[in-house]
Length: 439
Image (tube, rainbow, N blue to C red; front, side):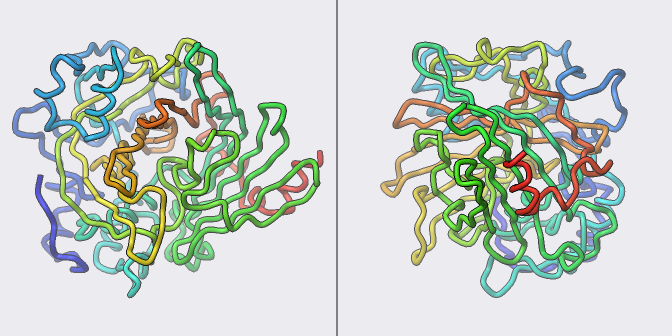
């Protein structure tokens, strides 16, 4: 692992020239690693497989595991694992990680690469150390990150398409094999991913907009949650309560406030691995390392799978998880002295090819590892991006876990909903939220 220390330094001409050559258009290393377990990047999955729809086609269905990491050999592979992954293997009998051949499937659209080159010489952090300034458009702001906060912004503004619509389920398994399902319609808009956007002003400083319509359980059906996340300030949030038929602003729907219906196992800023402002932490860019991370998890979204078979009493069925060797950026986040958060420390692991967040280890105020969260990743050639949607969160103290954004039993994810007008900016208004609740 190497550390980066030139905090705040703008990209040099030589660095910018390397994009698209020795580095991918967004700054990942093109070359294979020393032992060839990570291949060279050759453009990612740009051809749409026959019959492609998320959950209907697995481009790597014929791959077989190379080996498994479990309690018998975890120490041998410790340098390729996070502290959280090691803890899960040691805590739960039978927990294993099947490691498959590494497939660098993440593509980069031409306009994202072109915009990344522009951002490399202009983007900067504000005087407060976390707000983003002078970013020009839909590319990675800092392809040569010099600080942890820069890496966080690369994650937050990574390209995943303009917006999508999906029927998702958050699941809470119990020890007897039963589970509680929180089912929702989810709508997401990422206006900064529009190739026509040239500055935050073009989209009103909006980073993303999220809308959730709750379908089940019956006790919560009809509730709605609306989030507007911004580039230069903390997010706004509103909640619709069907019993009151009112939309209320919810300043507490942020940071480490628990999400209703999850037995205090799931905080707001854990949505989609991490969401909201990054102002409560100091971020240290530890460096880059090779790790086994969830990757090309087409089994997890396979429409032939049923939730009851995918969930074990203590952890997700290991047969539906796929791990691969990849290079990741590591960032340590520590709560600022004048701020508070239930997670006193977080360790983030970002995929170098997509800036997706694939693994988070979370610590309490005493420095004890508390929770472990992993995000799956799969390439979607129809939008030219790698998608991170499904998440798993393990609480090592409560010895329970929650999954979110699972889609195997829902309708096929509509990844082009915003591009083709089925999701628009009007979808994310308070009036639309109220209309949906009253219909």
